[in-house]
Image (cartoon, rainbow, N blue to C red):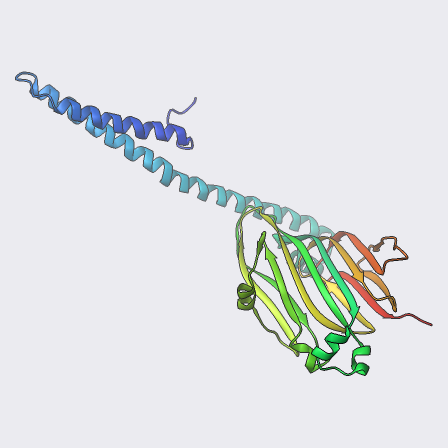
Length: 315
């Protein structure tokens, strides 16, 4: 049987509110008559239309507010219940096949996570210092020979897997330089984009602070993420590296696909390997372009990732 009252239908509620308003107008119109006879009947009709109109308008407002909030609460409770059921079923299955100590770690690092990264991308642009930079940074030619400028670009998609909003998730980015005191002031995070919003220079400075350790700068900003929402995070930063060095790029949350690009001077060789059971895809390199590209097109657990390195070419 179809219910007459349709609190989820906004057009229906608007019609009820409008009918209530019309009923009040009718009551006013009836009250304007002052017959010598039937006065009691006229008063009763006017009162009936007035009270009916007020009741319909109140019912429409309550239907739009109170019942809407009730439906939202029920939907949230249902989503939480479904998530709890799913976790209980997975727990029962996993505990049958792996020891509890391993299951606890899998649950903590993967199953309990409702936030993931997708298509994580990291670019290192390595270059030799220009003569003007050597002067600006107050370096000797001997010091400059062992130092590279490193322009870093990192992007990823952040996705809330659940229907439940996530509040106060901290978006972070860090950059450091421990090579030379003269270079620390030139290390910077100079661009940030969160959810299609490019932060101004003043906003960047507001969220950047000195981190733990020498020459560390950290960006931290709390964001709220609606249920099932997905958006892009991107940062551009600059630091300085040794002429021969090794970097380890890992993720702190479950990640779907990682891609690494490295541009470098012709005097260097670059290599990489996966910290993962699967191997990297090593894209073919153009012999006339000093750039390499690697991909890890798999699911990546926290603290897995890619190790990459560079050093001077062997003579």
